[in-house]
Length: 424
Image (cartoon, rainbow, N blue to C red; front, side, top):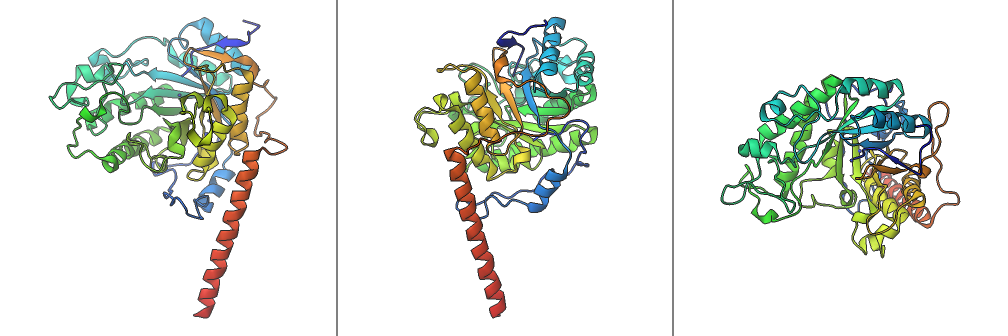
């Protein structure tokens, strides 16, 4: 495949990232300690100067990746097409699905998966493929759907979300969910994640790391009979804490996929996702800020799907008030849903990240088709830079004005405190 068309067919699927040669933060303790800022806090951008400095001093290169589905990660022809794309463009990261919402597991050696018949050999000789990718300087991420699982729940109903009558609850697509409070359900997913680390993946990415969001959710019954928003958030954080304790000793990074609106929401959105609390136990956070998934009028934008730059910019600006830029690596849209997306739309989203000083991003296309023209050609050496819009966009100017206003307020607060101390 010497010549790639406008669209390169690859299998693709779904928070700042370090490559394998980077100097890693050691230990299995929390990666970052952050506090949830108040909505009107003048310190919302001041999370931890020490933490920011530590992150800034860590050698790293920006991650630009695509998801490769299990179906295109197996055939040699498609593997070679992926390698060619990585070698010719700015892409340097492969996010490979090892478990999907149907519950099938695509890596071998997981005891529980073998026992319940969940293993499906869609990616043969995966160690060989991982070596091929790494030999071409590609960072490897194992993406796995966590709590949406239609197989484990059927095989072991005790792990499933239930209806009031005790039957297995299903969402609007008829798919069952594992109960996030259930320790057996947690252990099963962590067993898969540990195996992925043993196979040689650089990072484990948890998708559907949440409670159900659609279908008759009022009927959901959990192991925790007193289920509420606070407990739901605690359950998700507890899973990530356990993942940190079990995976960090194996030398892998951990990332999570979260709803796009979590970057600006102040609650758990009814699904247990509070990104500040979640981010304490993981290395990277990937908000799925697909413009097509925002309702008309969201963020004051008439049609977010037709305004990819504005939608992604505002979403990521919101995230930056709560999480350092180096910890953010959003999923961007490279598919059409209600509005045609091509080079300009994809590039606009990438630019929105750069204008927020976020250098990492991932592209998603459920049909495994990527816009080749939206990707820049590979540069020699390690690309550690990006260019912001010049002249600045209206949104950039607005952000700068806000930051200057916050700085003035903080300075006044400091001066007031100093006068108060002097007066004593």
